[in-house]
Structures are given as C-alpha cells and as structure tokens.
Figure 1 (cartoon, rainbow, N blue to C red):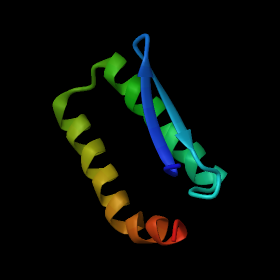
Figure 2: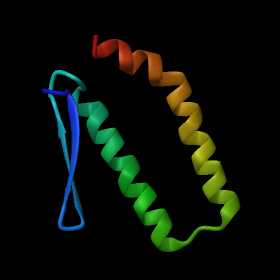
Figure 3: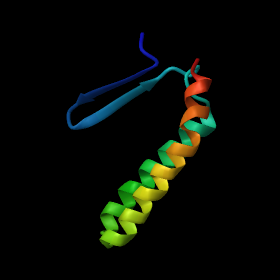
Figure 4: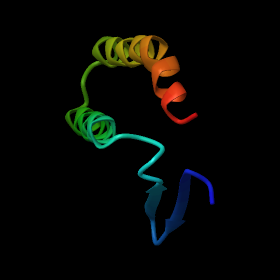
Amino acid sequence: MEPITLETKDKKYFLTIDQESINRETLLQIIDNVRIEQLARKVNFDKLLMEFGDETKSNWWKENKERLLNRTK
C-alpha cells in the first residue's frame, strides 16, 4: 500500500495517509494551510496578495522539503 493515496467520489476527495509517513502536527499544519487557501479564494484577495501567499508557500517548501522527506525514509 502506498503511504499516501487520493481518491475522488461524488465531487469529493478522499485522502488516505499512513500514520508512519507524517506526524500529526505536520498534517494539521497542512490542513490549516488548505483551509486558509480556501478562505482566501472565497474572499477574492487581489492578485498581489495571492502572489505573496504563493511565494511564501514556495519558500516554506524549499526550506522544509528535505526535512519532511527524510522523515519518510
């Protein structure tokens, strides 16, 4: 079984994550980021603010990618 799987059904996503592949705190942080992203789209922030958010996420992943990937090995 893959550590992370994504399925779709009835216009919904079902994400399954093996508990050994990511710790709870990191998963909760990712969920919060998705919620914030969804709220930002509802509010319709201007393009400059959205670009800033994308840049911030990109920088975070650059800084944390190795640390997160090394946990799964």
